[in-house]
Amino acid sequence: MMTRICFTLIALAISVQTVIGQEPEVETDWRHHIIPVEARTFNYQTVPRGAIPEHRFVLRNPFKETLHIGAITTSCVCTTIDFDEEKLILQTYEEAVIAVQFRGDMFEGPRNSTITVVIDKPIRTEIQLHVRGEIRGDLNISPNFIDFGNVELGRGHSRTLTVTYTGPNTQWRLVDARCENEFIRAAITSEPARVGVRVFRVNVSLDRAAPNGTINSHLVLISNDTLNRREIPIPIRATVGTVIRVSPPALSLGVLSPGEQSPVRNAILLGTGPFRIIKIESDNPALEIASKNPPDAELRLHSLSVSYRNPVDGEGAPEDGIMRAIIQVTTDIPGLTPMFFVTASVRGQE
Image 1 (spheres, one colour):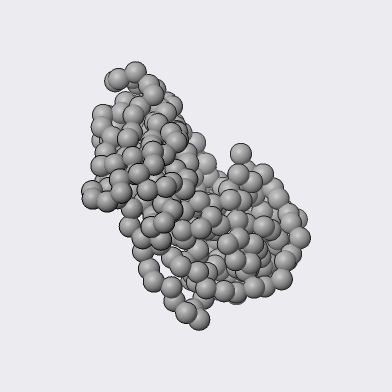
Image 2 (tube, one colour):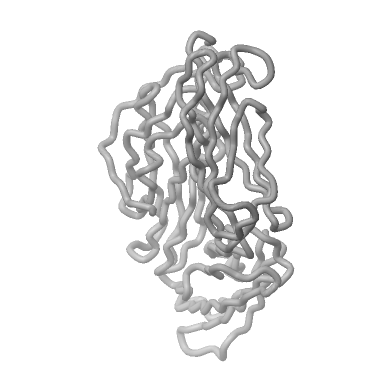
C-alpha cells in the first residue's frame, strides 16, 4: 500500500561509503550509486488541465550496511508524494520507489519542484530530485491516463481519450500520437469544430501480441501548436498475462559467526494469476531453499523458505565477510523466471 508521507527537512551531510563489489572511493560522491545523477530530474512537459501525471524515482541500496530514509519532502504543493513506509529501511540490494504526482488539477502555468530525500543511516546526507512541467489551462484530456488493468495474454484491449482544446488558436489540432512501446497503437479522429472548442478522440489499443509482463509507458500526443509545447505525454499502464512480484526483492539472513547456520527466512512470490514452480536454482550451493507449498501446486501465492549453511571456507563461503547470492525461480509460464537477492554478513571475515 502506498502511503503519503511528509517529514521534516534535515541538513545536508555528505560522506563516503563502500559499495558492494567495489573498493572505497575517497572524496567521491557515492550517492550516484543509490540513484544516478541523470535519473534525478524529470520533465513532465505539457500537462493538461485536470491531469495528475506520475513519475517514479527508484532508489537502491548497494551497500553492505542497512540504509535508512529519514525524511522525504517536496518544495512545492504542485507535487504530492506517495511512498511505501515499509521501505524506509532498505537492506542490501533492496529498492524503494518514490512516486511523484504533478497536480494539474490544482494549478496552471509552469511549475517546478524539488523533492529532498534525507538519508540518516549509515551516513547522514541528502539527495535532491527535480521535476518540472507546464500545466495548460486551455487543454483538457479525459481520462488523464490510460490504465488497461489486467489483460489476458493474447487478448489485447483498447481505451479512448477525449482531448478538448479551448484556446484562441482556431487552427489548433492533434496531428500525431506516438508511443515508445511497440505494442501500443493510437488513432486520432476529430469532431466538427465549434466556436471556441475543438474536440478530438484518441483510440488507444494494446496489441494482442503484447508479451507477458508489466507496461509502464507514455503515449505522446503531438499538436500543430508551434507557440506552446507541442508534445503532451499521457501515462499508460497495463499488466499482460501473469506477472510475479517477489517480496522482499532482497532477503537478508542476518549476521552469522563462521560455521553458523542462519535462521530460516521466507520469500513470497505473488502472481496476478496462478502459476506452478518448476525449478528453483541458486548460484550459491550453501543455500537451502524449499517451497512451502505442495509439489506442482498451481497458485497465485507461493512461499519459499531460505537459509544458509555458512561454510568456513570452500564452495559457497562468503567473500570479504559478505555472502551474496541470486535465487532464480522457473515457472510454467514461458519467459517468467522471477529472481531475488540473498545476503548475509559473517563476523570475523571482514
